[in-house]
Length: 140
Image (cartoon, rainbow, N blue to C red; front, top):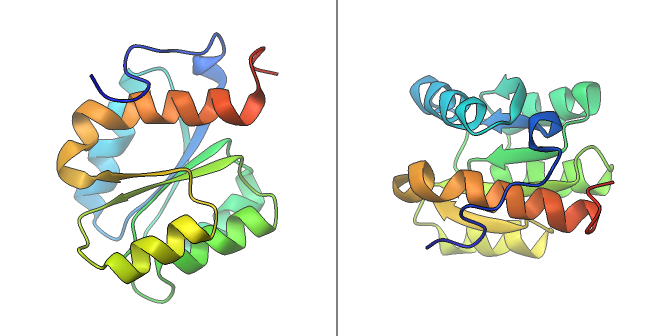
């Protein structure tokens, strides 16, 4: 069982997510997966620059972030979004094998990393856990 699997905070339907990936098909897959799991997807971005701007505008609870993207990589976008307080948590969802980028993202405050191949089974549970961890036991 993955971390957080089966755990849903009482406000799961109110948890908002920004999905960031340079591949449109992955954004669609994640949107469907997350909406079916009770999250509200409030936006999608195709690169780090779009992610930073959109996060400032929609202020999501959570962000799913790819690493290897054009214009601004996911590690830099994660650092900027969290430093500006524009999301409670960022979860890296990447197929990239760049350990340097992943280390940079985690050092920048990313909550966790999920391999894209594991996202269908692990991402919702990890996002529930990230949301609960960022809001405390009451979900407030």
